[in-house]
Length: 148
Image 1 (cartoon, rainbow, N blue to C red):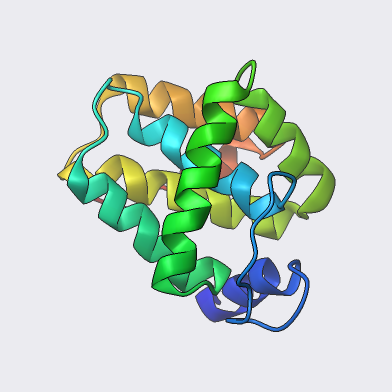
Image 2: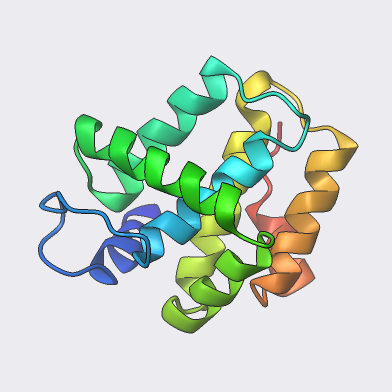
C-alpha cells in the first residue's frame, strides 16, 4: 500500500519519477516540504536529524536526487519565511492533491515529529491543525500516526 501511495505522490508531479531536477516556488513539492519544515521548527529548533529525515523523505517520496532535495529544502524554507502562515501551503495541497496524497503528507509529518524519538504536545497539536486544514478526517489522521 505504501508503494501505491508513493506513486500517487510522484504521479502528481510533471515528468517521470526520479527525473525532477527543477524546482520553482509554485511546485506542490515546495508546499509539502514547507509543512514538514513548519513541523520540524515547532519546538524552535531544527535539528540535523530532522533535516536529514526530511531530505530523505524528499528523495524517497518525491523522487528527487540528493542535490535536488537540498534545493527543494532551500526553496521550501524561503517560501515558509515569506508566507503569512502554513495554511497557504495546506490550501495548495488541498487543491492539487487528492485525499490519499494528503494522507501521505500526514504520515510524513508524523515521521518528522518522531525524528527525535518522541512527539511532544506542540507537535501533536500542530499536526492536528495541519490535518484539519488538509481536510483529513480525524479518524484517518489517527490511523497515520505510527505506534511509537
